[in-house]
Image (cartoon, rainbow, N blue to C red; front, side, top):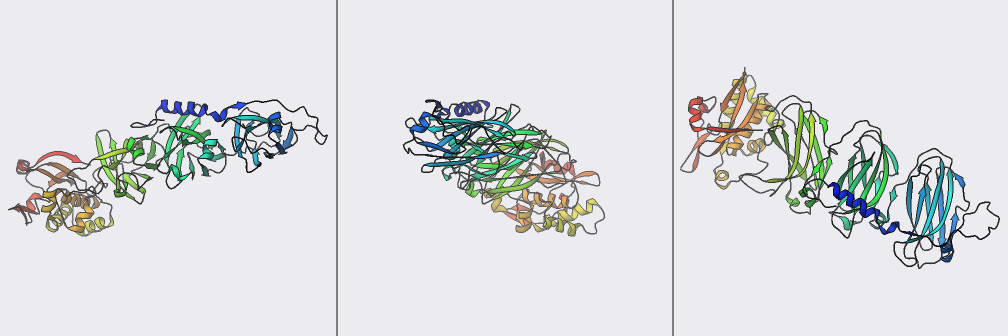
Length: 545
C-alpha cells in the first residue's frame, strides 16, 4: 500500500486485499479421491486417505475415526515418508457449523507433524480438510483427506490464525495469546518478528460490521507493540497483523488474525492522521490510540522512535501544537533514548482542539526561527474552562517548583495584584542581563525558557518575557507574551491587574545598549508606562500563546 502525505488510502487497502486474496498458497489441486480400500474392522468409520497421500507415504495417527466426538479441541498428528515434497507445511482448513473457516499451516519436522486443533465456533459439526504439499509446483497442495468431527462443548476457544507469510517472517504474538479474547475500548498487541524488518512497519487492520480501520506499528530490535483502538462499540472485531510484502514497498500481506470482543459501547470513529515524516523518520505514536478522545485541561501523549533513523539521534523534544479555532498554543514534549512522553495544556476553554505532533527539522541547532514537520494529527475534546493566560505554555513553565517558590517569595506580603506584579517586574529587570552575543549571533534554541533564564540570569527580550510571565502566572496573575516592533523584533508583557490590562517591558527596564554593549540600568518607568509615549516606540503585532 502506497503512503503519501497522510493516512493509508482506501485504494491501498483494496490492493492489499487483492494481493492477499490471490496468494498462490490458496491454490488447491485435487488428485484422486478417498481410498476405496477396505478397513481392517478396527474402526467403524475410519478416515480414508487420498491416493496422493498414499503415494507419498502419508499416515494419519490422530484421529483415526471419522465423525468422532470431542470437547473444544483435538490432536491432529501423522507422518510422511516422502521427503521430496516442495513444501514443509501441512495445510489444514477447518470449517465450522456456522460456516466460518480457520486455516492451520502445520510444520513438517523431519517426517512428522502434530497440532492441537481448536474448534472455534462452539458446539456442532466441523469439517476438516487436510492438504499436503505438491512434489513439483511450489505453494501448491494436493488433498490428503477430509473428515468430520463433532464438538460437544459450547465454549468458544480459538487459536491465533497465521498465514505462511507470518510463519516465514517469524511473526509471534505475545499479546494477545489467544485467538479470542475480551477487552474494553482498546487491545494490547505486541510481539516479535525477524530482525530483518527492523525500521519497517507492520500494518494492523481491523474489521467490524463491514467497517475497517488500521494503524501502522514500528518494528524496533525485532519487537513491536501498540494499543489498538476498538472503534465501533461492543461486539467482535476481527484484527489482522499484516507483514510487509518483500517484493513491493508499502504493500502488506495477511499475517496473524484474531478476534477481540469489545465490552464497551462507546464508538470512536475518527482516525489519527499520519504524515510522511512519521514513516520516513520511524516514529510510533502509542498514546492516544484514536482521534476524538475526551479530556480536561491536560492531555498525555507518548510513543517511540528509531534513534538510528535520519536526524533522530539529536532529537530531545517533540513539538505539540494545540489549535482551537484561530487560537494556537505550542508545547515541548521531552524525548530521550527512543521514547517520548509528556502532557500539554488545552488552555482555550471547552470544545474541540486539533492537535499536531511535530519534529524539528534541525534538532539541537541555533536559529532565529524554527521549522518543524508534522508527523501525526488528531482531535481532542476538552471540558476545561478558559485559562489561556494562567496555564503554562512553551517557554513559560509557571508550574515548575522553582518558579512557584520564587513567585511566592517575591509576592509575599504584597497587598494587591499590581504590587505583586511590580515586585516580579523589579526582580527580572534587576537580575537578568541582556545577552549581546545571543542577540548578534541569533543563538536561539527551541527550548529557551523561563527556567533557563532563571538559571543563567541572562537573555534577550523573549527570555525576559518568558521569566516574567511565568512568575506572574505562578502568582495567579493573568498575563501574556506580546510580540511586535521596537526598533527591531521585540517582546514585552501584558498582565491583568485588579481587572485592568497593564503593559510592562522588563527588557527596556533592565538597561540599554551603548556602543554595542549592554549598560545595566534599572528603569521603573517601563512598568505600567504612559501608553501614549510607549506606543511611540513599541508597535504590538500579536499575543503569543
